[in-house]
Image 1: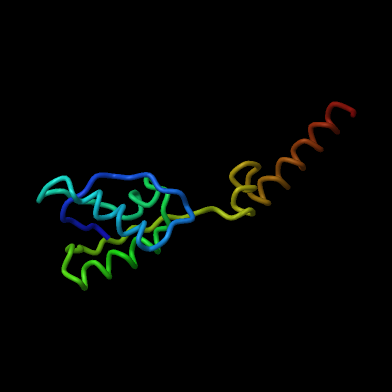
Image 2: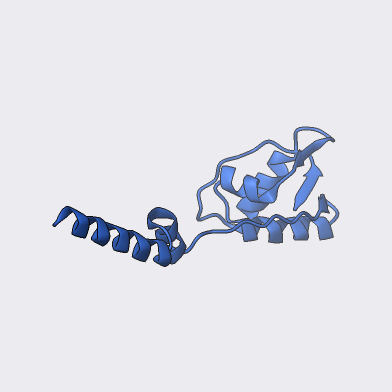
Length: 111
């Protein structure tokens, strides 16, 4: 989500209440009539807040007509353990091929 109204950014601990989240959002939007938080995900990271709490609080503030929201969607991929291994060591096929090539080179060297 992107949302706007008026604010300054605030750092809060991760064990915050909904009122802390609301205060952080409104504080971030209190900078003037054109103040905005263009990306709720980035805001959650910089302010050390849970993204789902920010989205829920923003929807509540929108319902009360305190802020306006514009929905944005971003997709990203996070590699799993198996994919990390493939990135680091290559695919299973490449591992087998490398082992065969190494064995063949070892045979040619007499080792």
